[in-house]
Amino acid sequence: MITTAPSRAQKAALIGLFLSVFLAMLDAQVVATALPRVAAEFGGTGAYAWVTTAYLLAGSVTAPVHGKLGDVFGRKRVLLGALALFLLGSVACGLAPSAGLLVAGRVLQGAGSGGLFVSVGASLGEMFTPREGAKYFGWFSICFAVASLAGPVVGGLLTGVAGWRSIFLVNLPLGLLAVVLLKSLDLPRRRKDAPFDFAGVVLLGATITGFTLLTPWSIALGAAAAVAFVLVERRAKAPVLPLRLFRDRTFTVSAVLSVLAGFAFLGSINYIAVFLQADAGPAEGGLRLVPMTIAVAVSSAVASRIIARTGHYRWAPQLSMALGLLAMLGLTTVHGLPLVLSCLVVFGLAAGLNLQVLAMATQNTAPAADRGAVAAGVNLARALGSALGPVALGFAYRAGTHGVFLALLPVLALALVTAFALPHVPLRNHH
Image (cartoon, rainbow, N blue to C red; front, side):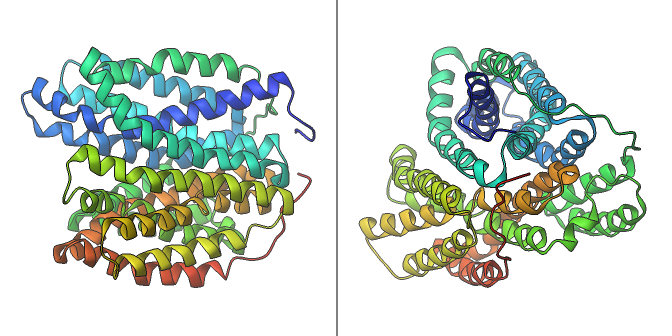
């Protein structure tokens, strides 16, 4: 546990942690610009559409598994294992001779990325007290913003200069650097003799997959799997996602808020991008997203500093949802590019205020034995919201982007009410 300024070894470990999660975030963004080349090489097969979906789905399904494994076997082992799996998937993608094997490689990559997101967050929870760690959690959002900005640019440059395979192979030197840096990560080693919850993992995976694909049959499958999952987890000796976590009001409210935030802030981004490209090409439309993305990083960094100084975080999700609601009200009424971009900057400020605050809140009240499960639960909730958002908003999109903005108003209003239900538990100065 770090109670003073980090040492040189601890700084190296922190760089390794954030380099790992940056690679995972970047790989979700960098592929988009390479997909036309992938389709051309593999004969225009429709399988390439799964290149992105397979990555995100595998990350969502495996995140709770990695969280549970970290709680049982120790965080550092699982983190290095997830990084190795991510790099193995990168090699498989870079050398894939067919679209099917490329998708299989993306599944491996995604499975590793799910472990990286969860393990890095939980590792910070073990390295720092909640009060000390607040400022470092803000770097998650900065990594997200930088990856969002750099992804399409890096993907386009690498694809044009060295071919689409290079966007995967470039992960190897950076990933190996992260492995070297993470050798200095000093976390408790532990081993608990507990049975692994295979049934829970399978049912949770089926639930996530069903609700992510969002077809009639998959939703029915997801609902049935969810019911079975609850029944199994109530009797499991070592559940992959302990239902007792929901007895903690902070965790329950944070999970609900994460679903709503993922739906509103991440689920709407594709429609916002299309809206900004309506009277411009993709390049100019992408540039119009830059102010909003910068606002995400700025608000997250500032909020993290304030929370670390004061120990109070409840204000951040409340302000986030209020600003998000204000931004959507503006987008449904204003006209002209300057006013639209101003509203999107406010929307970006709102998004940055909740990206990692809810993770901090749950880590603050979670028992040490459940730290990984709690981190996985919040990430899973946000992933579900992010998956549901695009599909649900697609029905509103039939009336144009204006319909999307209108549909987000009740979602953000509900999120604002929910934010005020978040308990006031000041961040602890001790574990």
